[in-house]
Image (cartoon, rainbow, N blue to C red):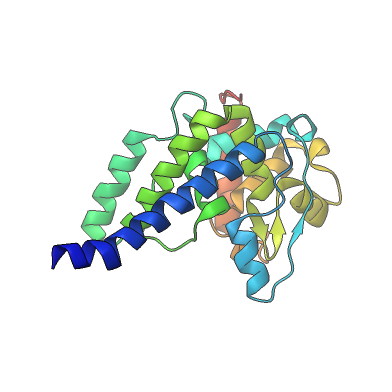
Length: 223
């Protein structure tokens, strides 16, 4: 019985598992120096009938304030850790246990990027495990600067708006290189729920988060 199970169920699953991660590794190698102009999130958006707007921009053409805001908001220990902030993960696990559901992720920028590029937004411990494997590969193959560069180029900032350059042009009519501090902080404030806040740029909670990010930005170290 075990042989039958291994042959017809376990073996195909293992092959699928290794094939997927070999594909991920191959893409990470290819994308090591090339513009990344697609992601799992963009693909799902297109398949659902939506239109994707994304304009790749190199690291040096993204305002320093946008890099500071992203780290200040999403991952304060970004330059120091190796893809995982275990203090944040532990806090998230305690909160999830108390709520009886996976409602908080404690995700770093690397984890968010792994999810955006290769996975889905569905919250589960299985997805988090997949995410962790991809993060290890990403942190091994890419520099912190590359991770932040790709993250800012593929993050969703509104309905079908992907990347800091497309977002800068859409909301402020200027390039990402010319974002002011308050503009950069406002764009990064959209990230937890870009589809909702993209249509409500004057929402009180959004403005509050913008102010918090701006207070933290000066103390942020960027790669």
